[in-house]
Image 1 (cartoon, rainbow, N blue to C red):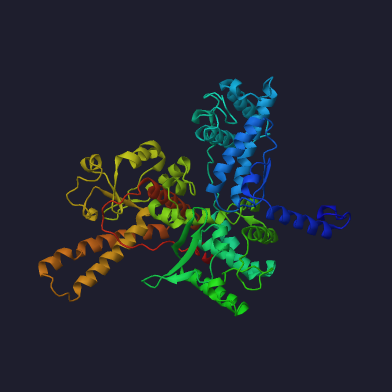
Image 2: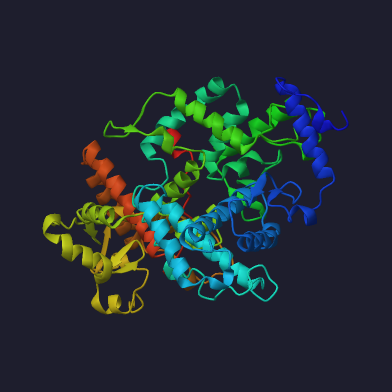
Length: 569
């Protein structure tokens, strides 16, 4: 035997695994990026990533070399374990294009100069055929078109179609335009969030999680996912000292957004979450007393981790979470139908976090910061309000509308379905804690009112049950302001103090209005109250998406919804 590869390993799995591992490491020791990218199958470890990437599915040599050149240019721009998986998908899209050329042309697509728009259309027809036959999902069809178009554009921008390049002579019309990509399917409702009634049941089983999985770290990780809405990888890699206090003494979670490479992000959390993290820190410190805190992870792995510096993996967390869910009994909606557990993943809790805050009326610009998105459009994809559901919500909220005196405006909602919805959209303008129907002010977008911020004293003012949290917060703010100004403040003239002090009549009217709304709610049955609560959540969510701009009104600090709402219910 002259080399390691000749070692007999038949029938001995352990020896075979060891030899293959040694051969792999030896091969990487003598490899370099330059020689690796010349191959048709790349070991991505040599290129600083994970896994393998094969180009053997692309039969045309010119196309294979062009795709390899594009991949070699694109790979260094990515990071994380998913880089190789994403490139694998893109190369797969080019393999589909290669198969279409091979089957549809006499030269099997070997001559790039002979290709044109007709070949692209044949590719598009082939994808449509596979999708119609159920061999290709609608999502995969869209992604294949997008990925193939991206690579063909990149091949040109890198100069590979010039003389001497692997794709020399490739026609300009051999490409995919934006119009070639099918429209994405509307996901409809519901979104990927877990319904509130299902979340309550899941949180009720949290205490059993540690017993079922025999892992404290998994239970803490799942609770943090539910409480904070962070991605699984962000929770798994939390540092031991990830909890700090801001200037006001409130707890803040410090984490790394590895997906966007935004490090040391800060997220306000509840005291319950802070206690959960503190208890976990004590448990980790007791388990690894000799390791410096700077090297510790909040959720250290139980295997091959003598110093506590290696965290649990997201894959491990996902698997243990699935075992825990499977151990539960059926999860049922309010109508007693069973909810499919397969729809619940650790990432679902991020969508639930966004939905919970949107339902509470958190403005979308604030929600974008909480989700740590750079784009408002990305935040909008995490929750949804359909038109049908919004119309039903407006019906319920309109039926509980009040004037400034607290008198309920009784109306037959069935006769107002179209006119009231139109009025809700364009016949009124948003004002503090309600709407205004004064025509000139509506026409001016709310900027033509001489008594701004004193809507409780105007007959054109209307409010409804969906504004109850805002009215309550405003009343609290008025009372605090009155008490503060009533105290001795040096250097303030009496006329200035009197002008700044909230009017007693306004406080009385706001208090009476709140009392009237609450009084009507208490007269509802439990089922009716639940329906109104759901309608209010929909209306407030729609309001936060469609009206994220400040009205210029006096502001008060409203508390964010507790991330533990489901488990306390």
